[in-house]
Length: 111
Length: 112
Image (cartoon, rainbow over all chains, first blue to last red; front, side):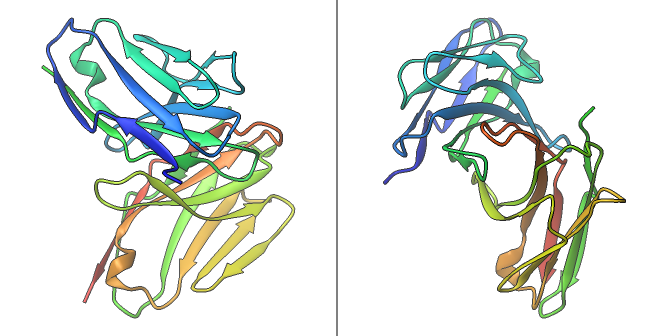
């Protein structure tokens, strides 16, 4: 099992460009999540999908959109990137209440 | 509201015990977690404790929960250089679907 995979690992964008971060899990989990991690702020929830076909806003959704493509895949889209979106983005999945499994992260720099 | 706080930094010597502390504000939390993040990697679950427990021990790790003070701690016995990482505590209020609130993380540095 690969667990949770994310692509790309690194990305540099110019202000105003768009991109999609991809996430896939092979654990048959119902729930998937997108977080951003900034220094001194821990992880903040951007969007989540409690089950296939549903998505909901988290703590910091502005400037992002998501798609739960199927049970395995949950993508995060930046329509018009801003320097404030420079961060490390983590995808996670969970099959119940006890734990979330995290991907390795995508490091995004917006110039 | 939900808020989880941790001290930012802890430095210990190899072989000593480390104690990382966390305070949370939501008394309805059902599970409390400790995650470890090594440089350049994602978060890895270390251990968790259910809110009706006071203590949980797992090899070198001991979790203590004081519900009255809303205080959670992680003790690492015989700390090794490989334990150097950022440690996050997190709380969850839902039992069927997990929505976590993370602390800011404590960077543990273990020196030889």
